[in-house]
Image (cartoon, rainbow, N blue to C red; front, side, top):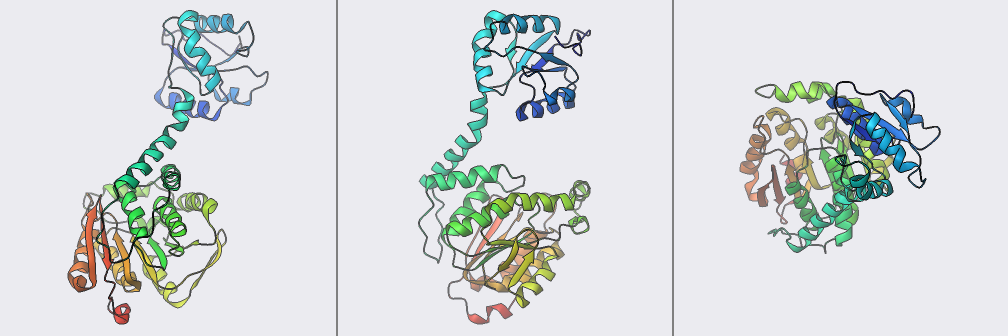
Length: 380
């Protein structure tokens, strides 16, 4: 037993994390420390760099060695261990069978590591299967492209799930469906932050050969201020790091970029001016991307104040092609009515140019008429 180990003294049971150096082990360690739980790390390696991260540490034989059982029993008794966490599937499986005899009352505190690691993939396959078997009926004016395969949809769900963000499941499914009923053109997203919906749109753009994705976001704390009525959003936003958010966005989108994704780091209205004047967008991370200059899908998810949402609609709406889609995110928003007011005004003003309008989840989806005249670009 390592001399760093101490009895708890208070009588509180400790959690043994074994092997202590695995990534999941270190994640669980941080959770325990945050919750103030007594925790002990353990390893069978003679030198394990993770030992310094733990408040207490044990050395145990490999589970294949005959002395392992007795060493574990002794550690449990000496260190007042009440539960064991193991992300190693072989160790977990052995302990799930051996603990009843070795240490009655001591339980594994985590589910099977295999089940834990695969749960997200299984859920993604379930979502894909459900979407394919219960597609959203759209009265779209654009003929539907055949859907992605179940495994392609599952991959989309799974990889989107690991990206932080607020894109709810209902909106996700609608995005998959409108992409099948979309004309060709650019996809433009106003407000991308960490890149969850941007990833979904970029992948759909590739799978359905729609066009390229342009993300427009200032990634600036100053532009996060929305003056919501109770100030809750602004207080939470002030604690975020815009520079970090941009780095997270790039990390999330770069692995999937095939010269079809780029961004403008500027306010939405300035981005619209750039987009109208220049088809090329260049960044250090994504290189140079040439855009078509006409929008097939416009996703508005920028600043949610009424003035900002209205300005976004005015700056970009007229660039959407016939049969194209406009999505007003957070049309239903508990902190204010900016997106809803802007969306409703757009609907009232251009109802003769809109074929489809519906709300799903918290977003408003609009499809422009397939008979839209060429002078549409001058009306918004």
